[in-house]
Length: 533
Image: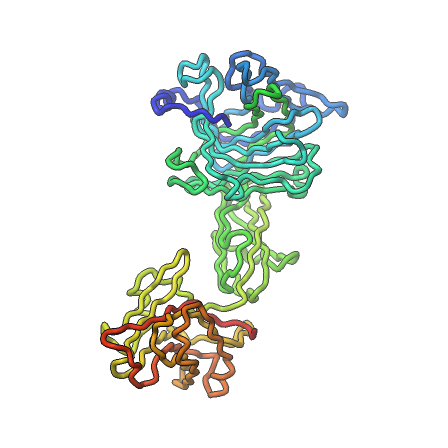
């Protein structure tokens, strides 16, 4: 959209002048342009700026008798021709799907074309209100661009948040909110959709298809708009979400040459019972997803029920009975497998098919990855040391998005070994999902003294067995993974179907030779179970 910014004073002046759309009854609408009259009588077609009066909208009939609307500007931006022209209907929507057939070739010019949702606007007759030129002024709007200005080999689509005629996006390419459409055969028309769902956060997604209900051609990532400053958003630029507004289409060209624009739209619609479910957790394409993951999603306001589909690639099956809410735990996933899932929302007008998402289950089971702890106290209540005095420190180490455990020890003092034990509330079955090995990652420091490192498992009956590794292992100043075959424990009589305790220790019961109050340490992370190899 336009990249000029209104002053705060002008914005406050506009509050009382916003078009009186708030009392309009929300109603789905569809415009085919095929009758003798428009399907919706309240269409508004307006430009900005409206100086030369050379912006037009025309209903055109093609050789096959199909009718569509053409938005045209013949005067260049340099000569005060309109930089964009819009068509909209004053029906207010919150959650909404806006769609249209957009012509990006043929007799259409190489310009920007797009869809608008949750638009709040004014008409400034002479420019005195805004300090800009006279015409249509969008105060806030979510838009989808179909960007064909660089020709059919370079078709792009993007979604934007626009405030007071200004695009406030910061590097949208970095967040896949502005994407190149795959392939080269784009000298044609496409069916475009803009979905907007939620009130905080708001989820905005743009898609184009070969034709309505046809194959997907390209889809942006979903823009998640919150009331805070989002990473894709210019700093301090209009952080508040847009809660509702009207829907429409627009054409745009802010270049001096070629002058103006020529864009056609057909079968335009705006429906509240159309937007798909959004906000999948795990995110679409996620990897290393826990095998016991709980799926969650966000539904549009029209949804009174849902159908959930899930399965391996090409083999989704409907969950019966359907979930009663917006979460579901599959419970029968396999390690390392990729799954597809989809939420079809059920509402008063029927079922709206959702987008298909994927995720890949991790090829391991987590014993403890230290991500569930938020404080050192939580960590210490889960892992109990054998010293029971301040001489032992083990704290949560936050590193970026990941936690690990810092474990310190002073084995120059009696009992000359230090260990920490996690006791499970319920006995653990470590024979599921074909797991055969136990691993954990650690890093020490080459200045550490030598300390025998060991791991002990104990089952619910009290049977235990200890495995030891090199005394110099704790001197590694690179991350290492110690992997132990679970069969070594079961061969020693430990029941792997009822593991009750896991202990990690350092020291062999003799003086380590550390001097004075010296503290050695290692970091521990990612205690996992996995298939052999």
